[in-house]
Length: 545
Ligand code: J2J
Image 1 (cartoon, protein in one colour):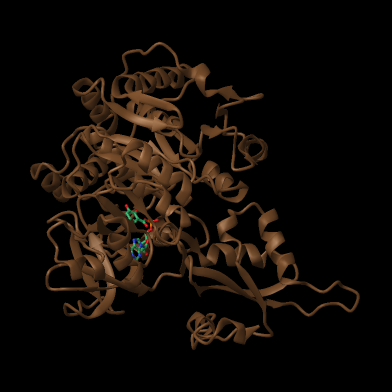
Image 2 (image 1 turned 180 degrees about the horizontal axis):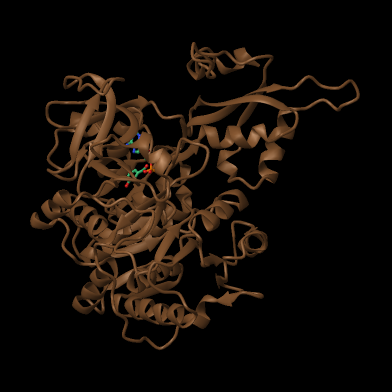
């Protein structure tokens, strides 16, 4: 057996030794920590999911049962298992059971469809998927039938709810058995990258590095056993999982309340009922909460902190959060690849309102550089590069991409443009990567463009962000069609949107708007000039149609 997962880039030995010597990498695995907390606080409530309330003892027992069931069907060390679950307690059972086994969850989002899931299954050679039967009117079993027909390596589909021909989740809740835990230096899971290139990238995180970021985050945010966290964002996303998120809550012995839907009304009801003390939102969701008429009807006085991250937070929305909810605002600038920044409780108000915080760790190395990788002065805008005790050194099985996404000495090129203040706080000024941030959901432009180019009538395509009051950004595809034969039917924008949906991409990636144009503007090096395309939205959007 190789010493590390093939396709994983380890930290150089000198760095690993340093992070261990500092006590950052503690050798404690992600399941092991849950077991410790369950032993310490067996009776405390760990999870509230709908009408279910689980104590830590019960939660841990479910995890050990499911791990035994997974072992029985042959899931073991380093096997990849895709999780695609809505916000259900089973999500945390499944991932902790896999952590216990040393098998690797791959965290898909409920919005992903055939194109994404099929790619993950193939690229990570996934053996099993854990899904819900249906959610939000969509049947995930149908999706799995399609994926499995194309990918024979996918042997097991495990379903929460009605399993039909698949394996029922509950049928795998065996008697717990003794199981040897994986080494904490091993890869614990594969997280998804927002991406900027043609295919999505997978992020390998180890037990050691991830648990350090969770522990340090919980400390920065002052979590204790009394915290009650509302998980309103998709549970599999890195932010609500680890910043400090559900894992931070479990580490602290607190309670995670799962919101099945993120709309204001459902969340307000849960906050009032469970006396929720904090939650994490993306700016678009915060705006929807702020503007909700339901606000006056619920007692939200238990809220102490609302964290905002994942996308640009406008200054006026930032100011309205403490004013409206009577609680603290914390800005969070993080990424599934690693680095997470927080504003701190003792930061002055203007810092909390106008910066995206500073790094978790004294050993997070930050560089802000120009286009030639020369460091720029504090206060100047540049590209953010980072390296540290919980930032990856490479994507999973992506050698060619890694050569571009990391410097020779291992700094990750975040693709974000930032300013660093003398205090170490970062302000996100924009983005150099070719990505659209649609209310926190990241869209890799090239991925959508390559789907568009598969259409026989499409000659060229460029996807760019356009401003949107609610989501911050929406996507617009500028498309050049091939000359049409006289008898061919004309092509309308919605035909291209339907084409993309039928190719099985997540709905959030389907362009909100399609503009048919005679030609794209090009840069001197012959690439689509996206700056010029985005500038068309600087004037009122109606001007281009
Ligand atoms: C502007 N852009 C931001 C912010 C992330 C905590 C919080 C967020 C994420 C996340 C995360 C931003 N202002 N406050 O994983 O643990 C954009 C940047 C960044 C990218 C990462 C966490 N916070 N962003 O959003 O992997 O462009 O992680 O590089 O989804 O989101 O996206 P993602």
